[in-house]
Image (cartoon, rainbow, N blue to C red):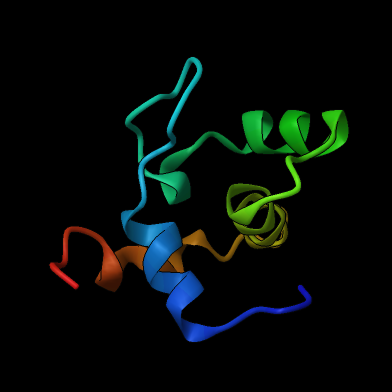
Length: 75
């Protein structure tokens, strides 16, 4: 997870998916199967792609429970 910083944790817990089937759903709440599919298709070369790459690592390692304290917070 290159270029990972603390602000990314907050973004993953509070940023909604901007498009597609899961538009409006928090990134951390995206289904693991979708994140894996997106990762295998090729992620965009922007902030969203960087966050999704980090989310992929979090999901496949079963770490999403660590985000519960960050959800629904006003940062």
